[in-house]
Length: 76
Image (cartoon, rainbow, N blue to C red; front, side, top):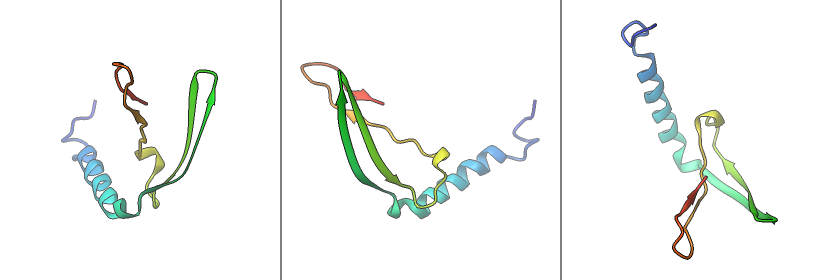
């Protein structure tokens, strides 16, 4: 098993590099067209997300909806 000392802080460096990339690209990140549809009891959302060359594998987009009638919020 590699220790943080053995890999010379590679995990920390990866986090810092990711943070710098996000700071550089933040102003250009935006959402585009939003399409919604309903299939039986399921709502389907199709949203264009522009990442300005950020690695899509390093980004997570979540949908948040307030609860109704005393129900809890939904986040997916």
